[in-house]
Length: 210
Image (tube, rainbow, N blue to C red; front, top):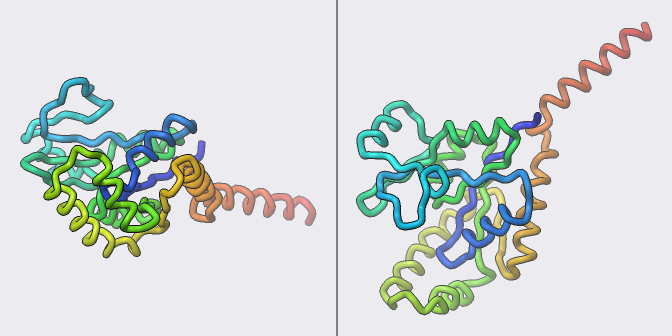
């Protein structure tokens, strides 16, 4: 069985990355969404191992000590991290694992696993991004400003990504993401076992003709 690929998906708030990821999981097989660990309490309707792995502060710190995270960070008094064991289990089972995290976490994962594919989702232009943020109708002006300010900072890191995915049409974007990921399976780095196999077979056949 061929090992799956680890794919990090990042993007501006309002870029549609979560919707794209959800649609990819619904429409295509062989994908698994990485489940993060967190120290915050479960919210109504959330389930252990589905939405998050819920940990105490002590358990989370113990995982850090064991180097059990691909990456972790603290946000608003709570810790969030990507458990390495869960990701590796899914990859070993042949699943392409989707990891939806921000830029700092993405670069940490890439440093630990250079074969990781980094994809950044963006709207076609800044005006569309602002329209999507204001169009929700649920955010205050201060929140919208803070998210646009964060987008300015995030844009500075876009060149660190392997691919930029422009979300102008949702259906087309989901198809493009799927095709992009599946194409990566044909890269030489993903075919090393096959290369060794066919080299060995050819050498053996050559020897039988001597």
